[in-house]
Structures are given as structure tokens and as C-alpha cells.
Image (cartoon, rainbow, N blue to C red):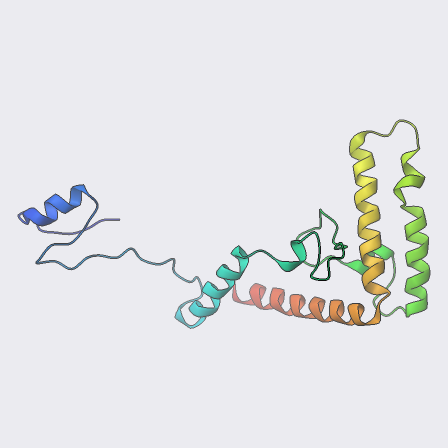
Length: 169
């Protein structure tokens, strides 16, 4: 950051060595804030989103407020995962179809069933375990009517936000 002070001001010259930019004749120069890429109108919203991004997310916790273990898999893709794709069902599927698909996927991806295969590396065993966690998480959310409704609302909100970001950027 460049500072413009007259060279004959001894106080400014003294303070320049200490990174202080003020004297009796000159006002201090403050460092500028990071500018909002969308202009002044969006500045408050932008800084609010930056602050929220730095805060820990409640869903990142290992246990929820009731003390029950959280069902979030440890490694989820960025953004909201497509739970319907994990269970190979469509968003318009009925509850019975989702329960049937969830049962089939849980059986097909169960780690105890697949881990006994000979010749699996530790990475493959970890992948099987993560896939089983994702299937279990998707089944828990989509087989509960209230959780499914909340998930669908979150997907709609995320889709609208991504559309807005694509439009404004």
C-alpha cells in the first residue's frame, strides 16, 4: 500500500519506519476493506455470506443436539448431495418405492457383505464403507416424510442460489 506524505514532515518520516501513517498535520490512512465484486448494492449481503462461510456448520458435528449420532457421511461432495441418485430413484417416486430401493441398496452395499472378498485393498474397503454410509444417509432422509420435504426445499433453494450466482457472475 503506497502512502503519500511530504518528505519534509519529520513525524511522518519517523512513523513510516514503524508503519504508522499519521502526524499532527496528516490524518491516518486506513487499510481498505476487500471490495465486493458486485458493487455497493450487494456489499452487505456479500460480507454476511463471507462471515457465514467461516462459521462451522451444524451438520458437520458428529452428534446432534439430542445426543444421537449424526448420519452425515464423513466425506460428502461439495454442495447438497443428490440423494435420489444415490438410491437410483426419481424425485417423483412414492414412499414405498423409495423404501424398497433403500432396502435393496443397503443390502447391495453393506460393508460386512462386501469386505470378505479376497484381494481388496484398504482403500477399496474404505470406499465400500463410505458408499454404505451415503446409502444409509440417503435412505434415512428420503424414507422420513418430513426430512424428505425439508431436503427437497433445500435443493430448490440451492438451485435458485446457483442460478442467481451464474446470472450475476
